Image (cartoon, rainbow, N blue to C red; front, side, top):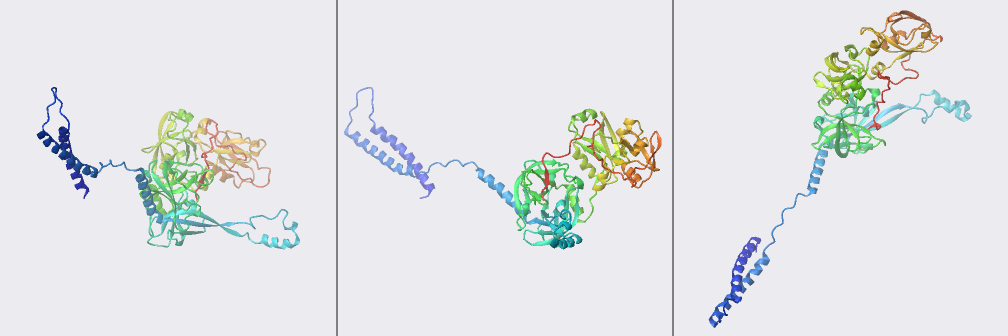
Length: 573
């Protein structure tokens, strides 16, 4: 019998049993009155007993039906937590399946010179060796030092079916040979198509077609707490074609790591921070969201051990990044804007002096002589609060806005100076290469016992010169030196050396580079003085580095804090 029929019979039985049971109880129970009991006759007994018997029979009929009735259904339980976890797990699997086939291992070979087993000649040379070894070492010394190949491991992601692969610039830098292993375990030789050291991005290519390509997303939509996947070949685990995957969240956006890669003028700013495990070998690999889109390129880790401490960083995929990648695919050089100012966070003292708010804007800590900023009138101590129509919240805003501005375009800088809001127009120049930048940032040069520095706007104001006055500032003179004998003293300004105009340290170094004998220098406001030849017969070339260099100072004379992060950042290559 079906459950539906059993329920119907049970209901019918229950109704009938209730009615007949009440009837039976009524007949079986003696009636009590306030008078004496009525005598019962035989007829009555004959009527009541069959009725009671009928009620009992109906009750017996209903009991099996009641036993067959199902229990009431329990309320549906709430959705279990396991289902939610399974849904997240499924999303991770789908994202990994979308991006994973496009992730590659990048094996790099670099040529390096060396010596015999990495050692120099023994102390004293071959003459101190036993006779049997002299001839061997003599041959070794005459032969060119052998070279060896250093191997590096990184990651990359295919961005087009025709073989273009996006990776980190530091992964393929100085490479002599690049080998790429695909998810199919096929291996190809790759060549560098284009690279951008400043943003640590590079595009390489293999000779293949019909490859699975990952989709580039938009990191500008990322929020803290969103799930992300880091894919790549940590410690080489990925050379078998199966990319390693780690799972985490976006810990922060817009992060900056100052100091690292400065010799290459690398800019690690506006980075994505994640706690997904990023280890050596992950560099160049994708950081993906749960939609299977690449939102970043793993680049750096901050670690005390050299391995993941849960603080990894990736270069974000933005509209600007995509434009750079497209230019790299065409082999074009990436050019950045430059105005020649060094900036830092605004502290309490700087905020009071300029009228700015603490932590808002960017403090100009140094102005490069002859750079666009200096020509426009930017001074040390100014606080940049706007560029064009865009507000400036911190130094990173200045860097990103300036470097994204086309060369030759003019922008309006809004600065706070001693409580006043001023505007100045700056023509953006092409950012120099690392060597030129390093030379422009030198604090001075030594020559014939005197140290000269750039003539900044603050120095002009202190010594009462006009803005149009050019030259180099004499910071220090050694006693008994050739400069001291000529009557040169600290605080003077030289604007001419041996008939050549001097407006910068670069001009000064070029003017004195080949001078051997005495020479005439012109001092602003004083006239010409002759500096005798040095005691040494050979020419004395200027040294751009102080023998005991001081750290750059601000105008209050306090040394600036070292520009280092709290933890040692490392390339995740």
